[in-house]
Image (cartoon, rainbow, N blue to C red; front, top):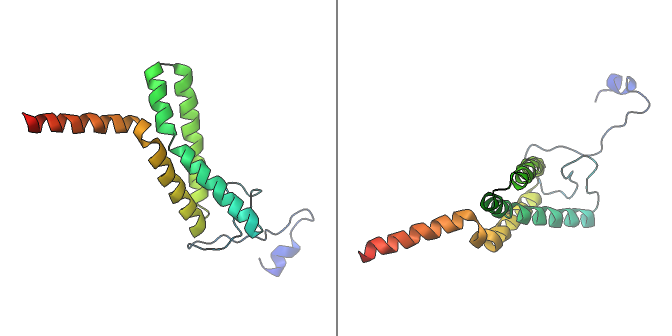
Length: 141
């Protein structure tokens, strides 16, 4: 900000001390999702990474919840699932927009763990199992 722009600032306006990088950075000063959720110390950053990882594990639970809602034929559960899906997509986008390598790794680990834990319950897993069983039957015949 130039000197003339600073002099035109109102008394209540403050300059932000956080930088926005357009390349992958490995700094611990990050804004998670909202401007007020920022890490200024390494401890806060590590805590934010764990929250990010657990959030990504939860992401892998959503297809299971969708399959459950479809089996129950409940309009309420389908609406709740839609709201959760919309919210999680926005939060995922905000996390990716941090452009921080550590956040990317935490997201990858969370999605990896979540897929490992929840894949057997996912509807796509049942579809793959049926396809595998059908291929085995075709080979036998």
